[in-house]
Image 1 (cartoon, rainbow, N blue to C red):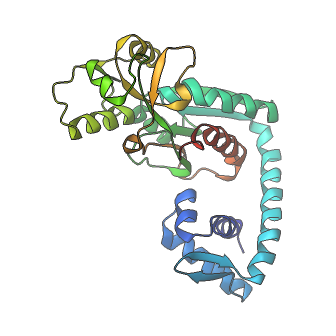
Image 2: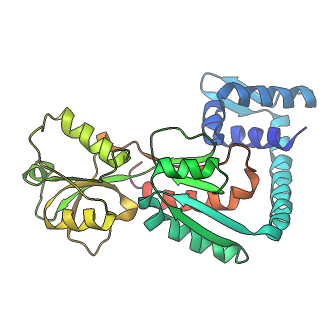
Length: 284
């Protein structure tokens, strides 16, 4: 019996779904199924009752879940003690994550692990992916649609808001103003907004590119509209905010190197998840 099998079993039990467990762990579904079957074979008992609605624990599965959770906690604590000897953390992140969401996570993380030295690298995703593959990053936070050569530890949907001047009382009013986007063509908010504009056949809309998040926010307040995640919006700016379901879909993802140790990231993942849920639970 291996710790990986126990972690997969616990995640499947928590999500009540092989598919969701595979997605959250960053594995293909067949691998998750294979590990669970191997565990059942080793223990000589079925752990789940499978149905079209998902999976539920058997009595033996319930017994194993309690013990497996305790084992994982002990393993993580032990690994953390060893990791204290080389306590440094280099995080790569895109602009919107690094400037707003990440500081809150780091502040909470340092309260729990003050001995860890933290460094943040801010670049576009292409450069960050290269740094991850070269071993210059311990982890990478991004929200791009494209896949990365690495191990996906966590992902959660962002809550996006269409923002415009305060004078816009309804969504139709925004078309009186120019559309504001980041200069990076790989920006997921830019892509989503331009797709939406094209779908509405608003082909004559003026587009202004701005290579600064603060610039986009200030331009929107003074006369323009753009799409940004809720966690970057400031209450001090006079902005009208619209929640558009058709403009949702970007996900914040945490990647580590392909052969990196996932266990050491559990505390950071938990803090990230907590911060994201604080911003997304209202509308998702």
